[in-house]
Length: 311
Image (cartoon, rainbow, N blue to C red):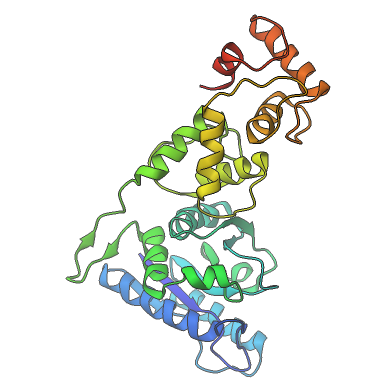
């Protein structure tokens, strides 16, 4: 496979963002490692980064021309994001279905490092993606003005995640293959728990229980956090596990006497307004559910109702 690797910016006046770190330095450090690792795996790699440019547009044209002239199979542009100091996470831009398929495993590998998944997005506004002839992606590794992301960031791990997503493997110190990361027991537990709650991926499908924190598990976790009122993008936290434990205790929930995260989950499942308070509207939703399930209709979430709510 012939890869075209574009190390973002680094061609004054085309310079990158500045926050808690400098984008030029980060992209150069990650990009050089990506090139070295792909080469170690036996791939042909073209460094599409210009050494100088007369303008930002000239810089972009030189990157595109290098990729097109070399007839690379895949073009990858490496960048870091910056916004307001609060935004965080990883996103990848693509302009075709082929590029999107290429982007997803890269995103999953980076997200597995603990970054919030911002998804694969339409990159039709990006010059290097719309003017290259081959499948092309632009990776925004993380936010360089986010303390959370910069605490997570490790140059070597980021490069390996990108290479693993692109090539399905990374080189070890001896130039051989290193196996993909194995399943994580806590991720297995999380995936099983979310499936029991019938909280799936963005398309509503059950999660694959593989112990890997990919984009689908991340989306399901984000949905669960929204339901129970947890503000914690990224990996599960202590609050996540407490909320799951509270729900799986299957507490008896009675109208006008129950509040909390278990109530919020029931309200979400039954299409009632989610406010965490078991009022008259929630009781009516419970009764409708009980009628459909052919169980005792009392508006109380007890053992029988929990049996129908949880897989």
